[in-house]
View 1 (cartoon, rainbow, N blue to C red):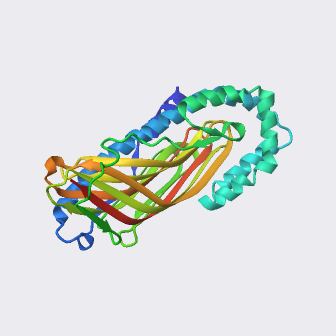
View 2 (cartoon, rainbow, N blue to C red):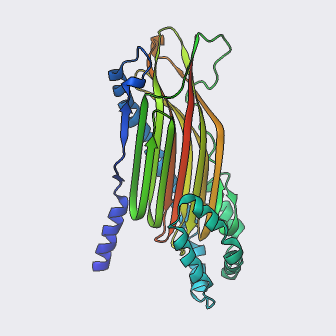
View 3 (cartoon, rainbow, N blue to C red):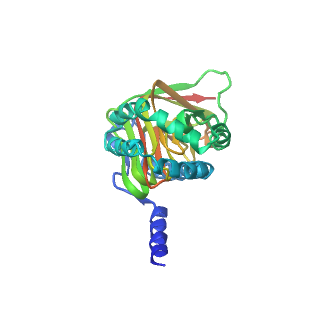
Length: 368
C-alpha cells in the first residue's frame, strides 16, 4: 500500500507543470519606431504572448501524446529485449549504459560527437539482440509512421523527420498589385519574450534568451536521465504602425537559424524525443495572433539507442499575410520566435533540444 501511495505521489509530480524563472515579456520604448505608442505596445504584447502560449501548450500536448503512443507501440519490443540483455555475460550492455550516462553530462555539441562514436562499439551487439528477441522492425516502423508521418528510420527503430507545414489561416500570397508601402526594420528591436517550462522527475535544464540589440534568440532544453519534458521559447520583434486604408499586410522575418537535437533511450524504460521550430508571429491591432511555424526537425528513440541531428537555415525566411481589421490600420506586432522541446518517457534516457537564431530584418508590406 505504501508503495502505491509513493507511486501515486510521483505520478502527481509528473503532471504538475512548473514555469521557472527567466520568463520575460518586454517593450523597449527607446527602440520603438517613431509614432508607435509604448503603452499600446505593452498591452498588445501581453495579449499576443498569452495567445502564443496557449498555442504552444496545444502543440506540446500533441507531441506528448505522439511520444506516449510510440511508447505503447514499442512496449512489446522492450519487454522482449529485457531478458536477453539482462543475460549478457560480456559486460557490453553495462558498458553501453555507463557511456550513455557519461555522455549525458556533456554539452550538446560534445554529446553529438560522442554519441556518433558509439556505432562501431555497440551497434552490432544490439542488432543481434533485436534478432534474438524476434522484433519485427518493418511492422513497428509502419505503426510508428502512422503516429509520426514521414518518419525516416535509422538503426534499432530510431527515427527523425520534419513536420509538414501548417495550413494557412488566411490568404497565403497576395494577389498581384502594387504595394502601397514597404517598411524594412532591423536591430535594435523593441519587443522580446522568453519563457521556459519543465515538468517531471528528472534533471532538467531549460534556458531562453532574447537580445534586442543584436536580434539573437536562443532556446535550449535538457531532460537528463529521467521521466519528464520541457519547452523553451524566445522571440524578438517590432511594433509597427500601419495607416488606415490597406486591406492586407504581408509580414516577413529573415533569420539565420541553427539547431541541435538528441534523443537517447538508455535502459529499455521508454522513448525519448526532441523538436525544434522557427516561427513568425503577427499580432493584429485587435490582439488576434496569426502565425506560421516551420518545424526544422525532430528525433525520436523509441526502444534504446540514440538519434542525433543538427542543421542550419541561413537564411530562413518566413512570411504571413493577414487582413487589416476594418481597413482601419493601427499597431501590428511582428516577431521571430524559436521553440525547442524535449521529452523522455522512461526513467532512464535523455532528450536535448537546442535552437539559436538571429533576426536580421522584418519587412512589412501593405496591400490595397
